[in-house]
Amino acid sequence: MTPLTPMAPEPNDLSALTARRLIAGYRRGDFSPLEAVRAVLDRAEAAQRLTNAFVRIDGEQALEQAAAATERRRRKEPLGPLDGVPVTVKDIFLQAGGPTLRGSRAVRPDASAWDEDAPAVARLREQGAVLVGKTTTPEFGWKGVTDSPLTGVTRNPYDPSRTAGGSSGGSAAAVALGAAPLSIGTDGGGSVRIPASFCGIFGLKPTYGRIPLYPSSPFGTLAHAGPMARDAADAALLLDAVSGPDWRDWSQAAPAPPAADGLAEGVKGLRIAFSPSFGGQVAVRPAVASAVRAAVGRLAGLGAYIEEADPDIADPVDTFHTLWFTGAARLVQHFGGEQRELLDPGLREVCAEGERASALDYLAAVDARMDLGRRLGRFHTGYDLLVTPTLPVTAFEAGAEVPGGSAHRRWTGWTPFTYPFNLTQQPAATVPCGVDEDGLPVGVQLVGPRHADALVLRAAHALYVSGAAAVPPPSTG
Image (cartoon, rainbow, N blue to C red; front, side, top):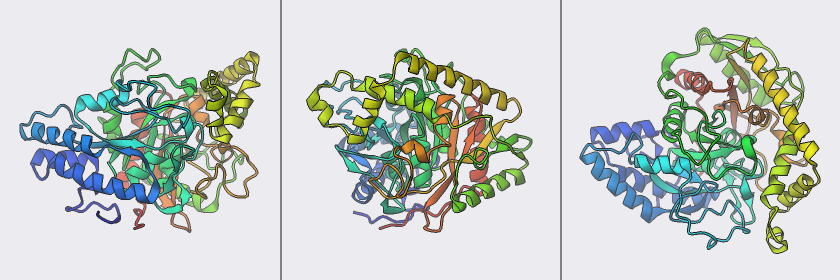
């Protein structure tokens, strides 16, 4: 088994290549999908030992898919751009051929035939992508770190004593360590952006409905599916691949032009608001604030007009809690006593809180959400993008829901920059922009108005091209 090494691309390390470089290599005949998938599986096993990123690694199935992709590439008849590209899938999405346990002991592996793909997985399969394995999640994706009674704790590739974040923590750790260049995660309050920031990779929460979802999330229209990758260009490639229509999701957005088309247009002339602390509402660690401000300076150097400006919002955490906790309560409504005893204790607490909410409480939260969306919409009439820190902190102790010494009990206490944009359904991405004094990654968040996914990706890509998005790779062995 190859030991873990830094992720800097090297000619003899296919697991370190981006999806785009793999595709280019396939086209030239430099190497085959089978060779790339063998390298990725080797790295996946090592990443599993280090971080516990996987629920399962489907090695035999992946090699069969890679062999078929190799033959199609040899004949120059790929099924799509991603034919032969390794991808991991968060264990929230249905994937035919194996159980989707959603991080829960309360889900029985024999409860279904498991013969259906979620929309995003179906699109990947249609393109010939190689499905390497299912990545870890907290139970039903309920919190911003990744640990569960079923799979244990998922750890950070930069420091295994720290959390990978969540709820798509397994996906973030897998991408960071070369166990496939692409992954599909979910984001209901930051669950793509939080772990991507903690693990030094790129993550995008697209506009709600850009990627169809089925089954629908118990957390309703807070929950988005999103691409996770080593850079924005790879994420755009994946977003375009999985955004096709699916009749099972009646709430999906209208088809949009390919996100990858305008990536190279840059940020010159864009009006960008920089809110370093939401008007002093958020205490941001100095190392985080410094790295984010440097990234904003790079955007200015690339020709964007930057103005420090705060959106007209007070912390909407109570609104988010009402919607999130009632969704959790609905999720377990039909669970018997034995099933409930199997749940994460924190999830049981959240469900109990949701059960105490009334219908009027819920509708009041919906009203507050509508007002928040209106105010953010007005804000974006003056600014093309909003930039904030992704998180006010870097990765903390693994296995904890909140950092040590925190005055907050729930994960929302340290994620004030992420969940507001689930309420408003806006596209939001995190780009790595530096490290703190412990070498842990820092992320900068780029937020656009609804349906401006391509613009967010364009600005993120500009940071990568300029070198501002570079962070040292994880080198833990």
